[in-house]
Image 1 (spheres, helix red, strand yellow):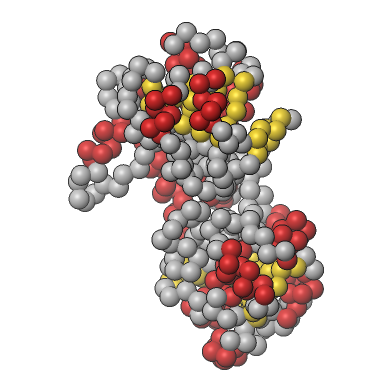
Image 2: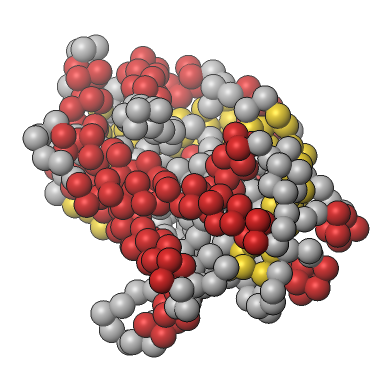
Length: 440
């Protein structure tokens, strides 16, 4: 298949789209193509996900349940755990996880496995587009040899590009339908074909000169945030140490400058998949070229230290208020990694609970309207729905995720102690502490 053939299929709506990985990236992307009347075959090796989808049960909060149901009923979306179903696809997007190991080394085993599936089951002339965040060179140096080892030549038997995902869970304005997308091909032709495929559903596509440029661009996006969050997290700790300086008021004042400043705000740590992981993908790549990204790694370490800092400050706050830390009952408000989502990946709240468990805290519970249960070590915690009836039983309430559905006025009026990591604008009282406020 050549470039013209792809354009004809796009125009005639006969292009068949394959998605490997039906998680936070793959499933919304599937709906984006389905809504433009393209047939999508979604593959995932998790049978629970496939069974859920076949029963029209959605597990991604950013997707409209009715749209998913309609696409399944109209047979535009075909979820499967049979990789051979991908053999009819003209384009295959790879949307699989890219975690790091305990030693902060990138784990690209999911990318390799997905690529091997594409190698084995894709038809001649297929366009492969990797969307999983990774280090520069993965698409060209890792994926291409897997095809070549099976006697498949690029721009003849397949086309290959990288186009980073830009999913922001919970964002009601920017989603997989309208967020501008970057794409870069391993070859010029591959890039052009991938660009035309993506442009068929997304209005603005920025094509760069290579897959390595696109891979590095994605890392820059998230490391930019990591570095700036680390800056305000460190300044929050500094304000607490100095005393009498509220970092939140400082940031609001600085934000009045109409140029040269972008406000970032401190918190209990960073979560989700990308921001916590991406710095280590880049530093791993840099070390392979005798370059040490000290500044980037320092920012990552600063952010990773925040849950430890929060634990230290919480203990000080409890002691100040004459609470026995080993018998204190703590209620966490929110365990998702960010506001109004169900995603708990790398959640700082969960890390804080884990640290408190190690110290010896026994009485910990949480409330989160988006998360039914969490597992920490060998213990399972269940969401309590009746926090208004039980709040007086707890020695301290920790605001760890600022979901908008929480009744902060009620919490302010009824909690014994309040430890706030998010600045939810609770009226300051003797029983209230906000990290970075310069008070304890």
